[in-house]
Length: 421
Image (cartoon, rainbow, N blue to C red; front, side, top):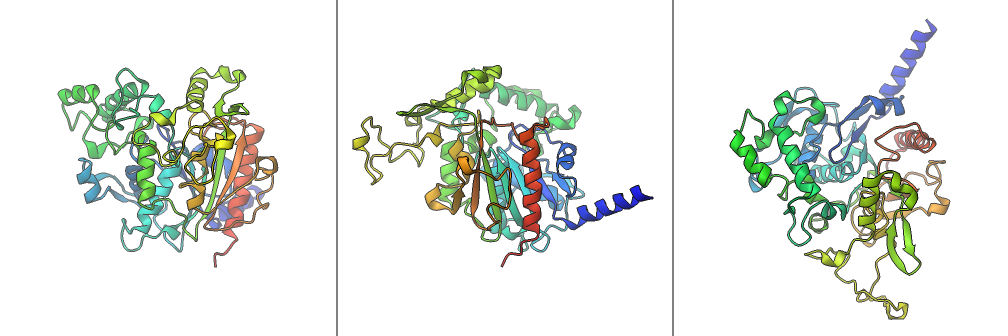
């Protein structure tokens, strides 16, 4: 009888709190059970979106997975990128009552971060109808999000001078082939290998083997501007930011966690290297080293943050007018996948509202009330000595992970109890 009462009380508490939607990153396989255990007193929904799709397509899939109905990528978008306008149908949404009066929390990892930001942008534009509004998103929390791109995409095969073309005999080309083969066999593949490619007609039920061979030689999807890899190029990010995407909604709470496991190369060199002790994960070590030594001058077009940079070796030659400027180490510091500056928030700090908490005084993992929640402002916290998956989505029960989930739970409760004026 006592156990039944406790169960009833626990269920009532879960129902009274605002649910959270988890959005995973590039090539991630969703698994909701492990997140519900981390936040036991709150409903946790894991949205299933295309693991290799563009952030536009992912954002549309995210919306309809929550509300229910047939995924509509938009007439203009689908026509522009030559794929079907409609995707799969969700007979029952995760939270059909989602609205401005019943908003949701969102938690994104890696590419899940920019996916949530794109969703907010589409809501603001009224893409999903007159009742859609960015106030439907109560809070955005991200970990290792690739808001402003990553140079790793070029290391893996994207051409630095002609994106989205992919160089032959690279990891990116092999990955694209794998995606096409799995998509072709989609009707008989396990759900965890679901690429949400219905609108592209890639399965053996919608295309023939000859078409598959053509795609294996050169992918019309992977080497397009409507795919996940292109969306994390600096060129794509600049296009989105130029269109005004990513600015803060005054009634949404924002918090990001930026992970870094590299060290500055030297006091006079802003580039970064992973410590040799990290050689245990060879692929991550090599990726991290590549990001930490990347030459931005090879990119065409030049990224917006590089256009006014001129190399100099004498500090006396530095000026404050933007003509001569040395990039900070945050452009090379990284978590093995994403540079630190990209994990902070969309847009440069000069163009958005943000508060960066000093790593030496960073007590967000200890005391969530150190900075009272403030809507419309990015609160950026550091995760030192942490790789891309050190906190989320993998869970190994480490002290850092336990602190993160405990703090996140307290933080969300604080927002639940904080009325927005």
